[in-house]
Image (cartoon, rainbow, N blue to C red; front, side, top):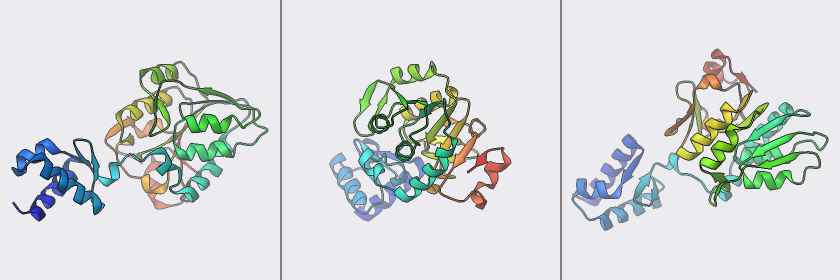
Amino acid sequence: MLKQERHQLILKKLKLNKKVLSVDLSKELSVSEDTVRRDLKELEAKNLLYKVHGGALTIQDKILTYNERSVSDLDKKSVIAKKAVKLIHEGQVIIMSGSTTNLALAKIIPHNINATIFTYSLPIAIELTHHPLIEVIFIGGKLNKTAQVTMGIDVTNSISSIRADICFMGVGGIDTKRGMTEANWEVAHIKKSMILASDYVVALSISKRINQVKRYSVVSINQIDSIISDFEPTEPIFDDFKERGITIL
């Protein structure tokens, strides 16, 4: 089989399954795993897939590092943060996920607001130490150095004991059929526990993640109260969400 044919088959399988494993491709293509790795490296260089240990993912499923996320779509995250901050009030108990959109929100909370904020995000916790009245409760656990958040059963257990007034949740993808979804299984479970612990759930989503679906389910769409996006609420993309009673800001 020619290299071009191998590449086409790899991309076809990737489109179908969202991931490919080198060991499986080696058997199916009747080539060595070294050859498969070279093929994947060439396809990654063309920005056609994201190479990981043992195989590859689609570009859409690439998990960005914290540094990569912190410098992307800054203008859109700023728009979302300015809308979201209007929902923060005196005396609230708040949970924030580890999104960089939430970091943008943390930076603009008015200094006269007295509230309690729980987060498992190290950068958000550090940012909130500069606020004179916010009580910051950092949810400890095993630190994921790439994402700069704590993860694991300790985080989930700690969140389950909280009763929050409002939850600000960054999203990997959100649509009316699959609800909120994430590319990472552990992140999906932590976010589910946050939603279950909160009286009001706000999804903070840059526009490109609206109607996107990731691999792991977090919650159904009826467990989301509001969506805040960089788009105007009148955009047709939100019509299906509004029909399900979700407030668009």
